[in-house]
Image (tube, rainbow, N blue to C red; front, side, top):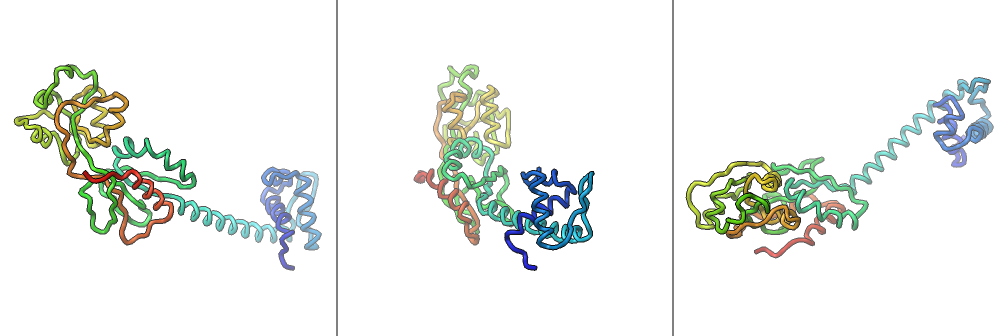
Length: 295
C-alpha cells in the first residue's frame, strides 16, 4: 500500500513507541498522552491489518511485523533527520561570516561598534579570529580580514578603511607627569614598546630627540602595551585608532610631542577570485560605512 500523508503522525508515534517499548515514554517525547500514542498505533495496525505490539500488564513488546516496520521506520527517520540537519547547517553557513583581524583592533575599535551591525542584521552569525600572522584564505578559513599594512596585497581585493597616527600616552597619575613638557622629557621616562613597524626610535627622530632611549617593556600586542601604561609601568607609543577608548575613558592621557603619521593603513580584504556570500558582503558594506578619506 502507498504511504498516505494522514498516516505520518501514526507512523511517528509508532516509531517512538518502538524505540522506547513504552507508550507513556513515547508520549513524553512527542508531547502526547499515552492514550494518544496508543490510538495512533491502533490506527496504523488497522490500516495495515497486522498487530505491531503485544500488549501485556508490564507494557508492550514488538511483534515480528512490528520489528520489521520499526527497523524501516527508524532508518527512514534517521535519514530525514540527517537531511534536515544538513539543510539547517547549509542555511546557517550562508548566514555565517568568518573574520580575521588583530586583537588590538577587534578589542578597541571593532567591538564597541559591533552592536550596530548585529542589531541591523540579527540573522548573521559572526566568527571573529584574532591573530598577528597574515591570514590564509583557504577552504574553511575566513571570508575576509581587516588588515593593518601597506594597502596592497597580491591576489586580494582591498578596500581602504582609515589611516593611522602614533603619539605618546601615559596614565594620568603617572609619577612626574606634571613636569613633562617636551619630547626630551619623555625620553627620560620608562618606555613601553610593542611589535609595531614604527616605534619609539622613529617618533623621537621626528621630534628631533637623539641619543639612547630606554625601552623597559616590550609586548607583542598593542593593547597589552596600553594596559601596561594604564597600570603606570611607563609611557606607551599609541596608535590613534587603538588608544581612542582609553583616552575617552580617561584611563590614559596624551603627552606633548608630534603626531607621527603611520606608514600603514587599515583595510578590509578578501580573495579577488572568490565572490563574497551575501552575509559577508553586508559586513563589508557596513565596515566601509566607517571609511575615512585618506590623509
